Length: 157
Image (cartoon, rainbow, N blue to C red; front, side, top):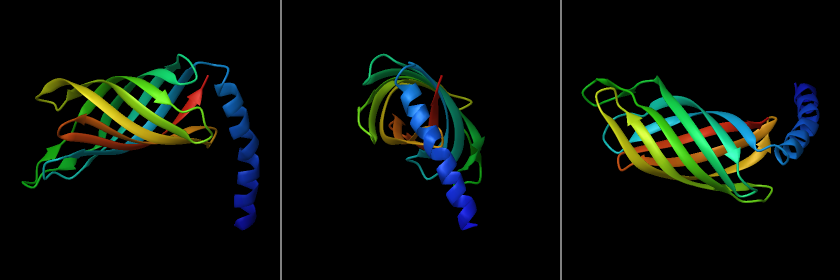
């Protein structure tokens, strides 16, 4: 088993270097992510999956569009299910370092099924080159009552 893990690590190391080099020459990226949608209320978290498309305007600033959909409903204390879908547009700022620090701000359309709101959103995260792309761990404050904690990966094309 240790030999298999070592072979996989050796095989992936040039891929990460290639993706990082390719990522510096192409401005477009596509990402997938998943995480916990958490309300400030007493409800249990829902699990959302999502995708984002980004365009790197320069080495620090990107424009991102993100869509998430509830994959597993959350539970309220009364036993009801809840779900939320989001569509966001962000201006994202990343550091030009080996470990990428990220801050983002934008607008999110929040769809609770019976309620639809447009809110100012912001977040921060940290990223690094792994698994053939830029892997990012993020925290996003969507509105006063909704937070998204996610892990995702972006691939440059």
